[in-house]
Length: 102
Image 1 (tube, rainbow, N blue to C red):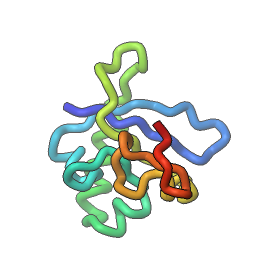
Image 2 (cartoon, rainbow, N blue to C red):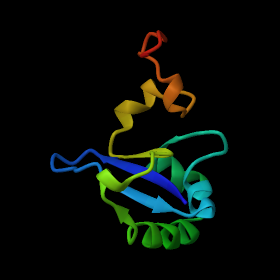
Image 3 (spheres, one colour):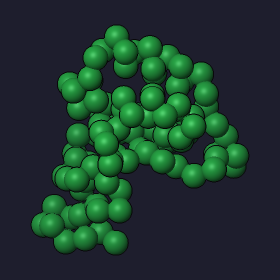
Image 4 (cartoon, helix red, strand yellow):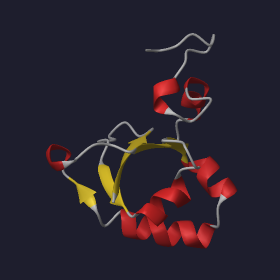
């Protein structure tokens, strides 16, 4: 199982973490990435399979204090964050001018 943290554009977002099977994780995150944006996920994937996967994932919320790492971050309604993750890998995050964030 892999853990996905969800970051939503809503003011009351609580940054929940959910557990996903390897297959579910692979539906959401392109090979070698750990950052995803929900609009891109649905643009590249089969909506029915994704809906089924998310139905299962949403049933597996993990308390943050119990999480054994975060394997991926899924953004909702935060398209402005895309510029910071051009490779869709968290460790490769950059500023809009291309300089590294870390």
